[in-house]
Length: 147
Image (cartoon, rainbow, N blue to C red; front, side, top):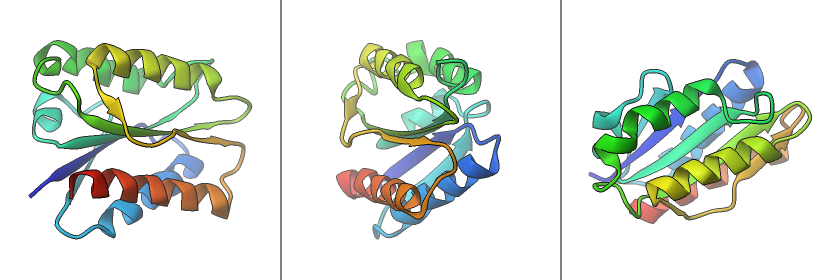
């Protein structure tokens, strides 16, 4: 069964609501196993077992979360060749701005040679119903890419 790995750093209620939306969207696609891992505990074995990855992070001080950066550090060498071309998507939540976080993720995923299959979902401030719907669609899009 194809597997969608959701790697997330979810320290706030706002990000929890986005994570739940992402998982709900992915669950709408039959025949895809959705595996969710906190970024600090996700590792190379999780990524090697996945067919696509959805990344979720807060924007912290103009960058992705340290937890998501840790994930990239852990998986880079063990997965670089095996996961070249992997489909991915990303959602980012920030209080004021998400630009730096998205840029840092794009640099990391370019280095990993992954393939973005949907535009990033960028949420500033309290997530709205439309924001959650966009993340639900993102989760569904990633799952449909491999389903």
